[in-house]
Image 1 (cartoon, rainbow, N blue to C red):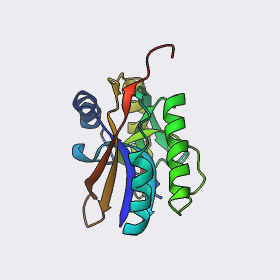
Image 2 (tube, rainbow, N blue to C red):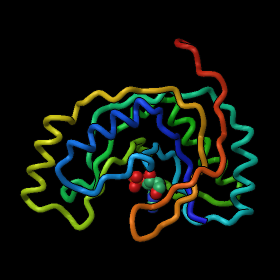
Image 3 (cartoon, rainbow, N blue to C red):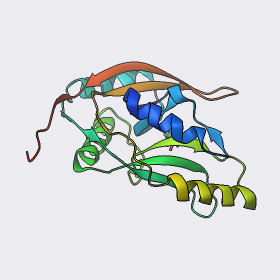
Length: 187
Ligand code: 2AM
């Protein structure tokens, strides 16, 4: 099955991101219930592979990371393909990402090497943007690009199944892997 590991958002965070989506004058919004912070896209995996990964994730118990936001951004360079809320790539989050990659390798599937840019995708721009859309996007970013979004302390890593269909994908949480207590400041 097609799946990914992510951090579910706090309600207050989701509400703030929904407000930012409501002001966006272009693109295809990600439905509010689908907003999440991806840690690793696992692609199509067999039940045996997911069970092997499950064992590693159950033992994880890393300190709960703080999720802090760092403004809005666009992927795709000159051909913008999506708008996202950037998440600060803290040492804790990077360590978590690296640990998950390691667990996947132990479970028998190496994840592709790619830079980790933690983010929450807010909208997609399939089919490219017209010049007018580009101007709308620039105006939107000028106005909201530095908007503050409330951070939160993550409680768990969640394994989601992603089912593709005609509309937005359907994401079903399959299991939660709770973090341990949050790291104390200065620790
Ligand atoms: P995105 O939001 O930046 O597109 C489920 O599709 C999640 O996995 C999404 O958050 C998506 O990130 C992420 N993802 C990463 N690589 C992907 C890929 N090759 N195909 C689909 N989703 C991917």
